[in-house]
Length: 122
Figure 1: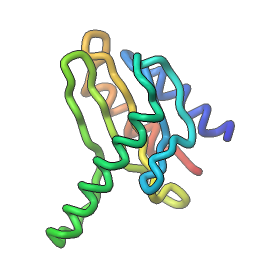
Figure 2 (figure 1 turned 180 degrees about the vertical axis):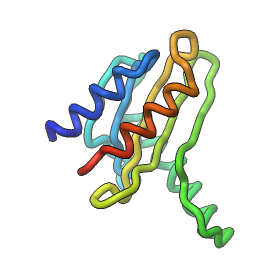
Figure 3 (figure 1 turned 120 degrees about the vertical axis):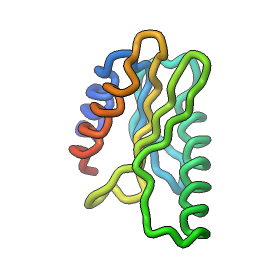
């Protein structure tokens, strides 16, 4: 579990990040979480797993031969980034990152998030 805690620390090191979690898509449970986004990360993790599952179903229903890379949800004061993990042992997991719109840089955060996501090994 220490490795996941290191990933959370790296995610929270992104400028403007206020919360981060690594989430199991099927259960909605956060395997690791950290930060102080101003709301319950565990509730948000469960809710966002519904978003990912719905999109996966839609891709399947449309018979698309494609995968989700990331999902961006824009709120008035925050960006919520969901990055679906790939690779051995990471199937069925995603990273959920909360970014402050005032202090964060969306393009740079997405770039750093992809780099961190590529290095995750569960």
